Image 1: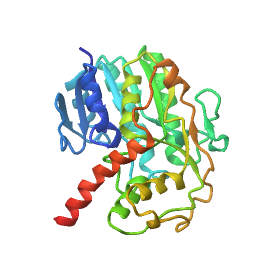
Image 2: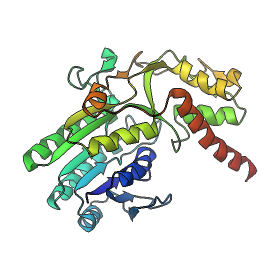
Image 3: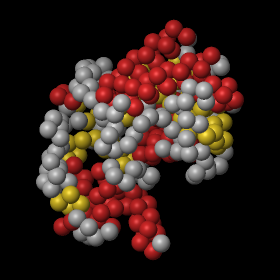
Length: 306
């Protein structure tokens, strides 16, 4: 049986990867700073801070995994794209990858990002679109992807680098776009947004997790985009939330400024994912928003009655 070590396992993407890994027959070992707050059947949990160099060897040696799914990173909205912590995670990730390989690991999959691309090109293809990140987050992800790829080549391991685009769904941070709009509208409060003309590629988090697990469970090498491949204007996305909840008037387009250098179009070319892996998303936008709204509805109601 293949044994996988999942980092960031209690996070937005990581938690959604656990059940798909169990279903595929992996022995799943999950690590996070919070431990098993949300236990999943068939998963063994470890509490550790990967930024603490002294904690990493013990966890890696205890698991002796064949596969590594590295999803842990600094992800606080607002501070993410230019946070100094991005640089800390390059160092921590390299320590983790080396310890994993030294303990017999053979397959490394770590999360990249759409922020690595030159967004001036709009459509992002792994081999054709230049990499020119304009944020510390994107630069650090790009650097780590190249370093892991080189390390895998030298050590004889295989590696893949899923570049994840824009996500929404249950367990998302409450201050990110879709979750914040849903929470505001559920609370009968205005949902201030930018002009909403930006066109993006949004994917339900469970579809993203299933795609990442499919990449791990394959022989695919190098970068692979994880997105829907379908462009949508942000005003249509947030408008769909307002319509579905029966309060379209609460969506306030233009109430806050867009980023000064905000790209008009960022969409993934998902040919590698669909053609080489045969993957396709399970959720339509309507189904995904319904699932996300239902998840937040339970929690907003609980908060109101507590």
